[in-house]
Image (cartoon, rainbow, N blue to C red):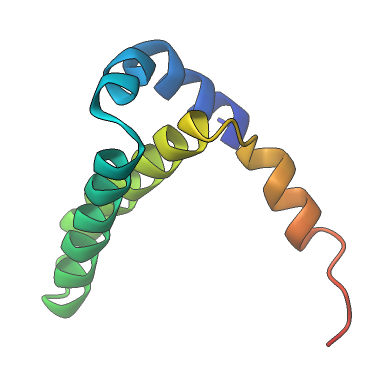
Length: 85
């Protein structure tokens, strides 16, 4: 599965709800999931880490959809041709 696939899946199933929730609330959910990921790292709970990383990716894709940002394109532009420091 590519980042594009993830973003399309989130759009197909959740875009309408994300639009109704709004940008700020969707961003808040992403931050909450990052907090849950942090907790799973602190407790060294591997299963929870896997679940929370998936949640972070899902909410990031939802946020990108609301912002009309192509995650895969943005990632490639930023990291495939990095500028020297």
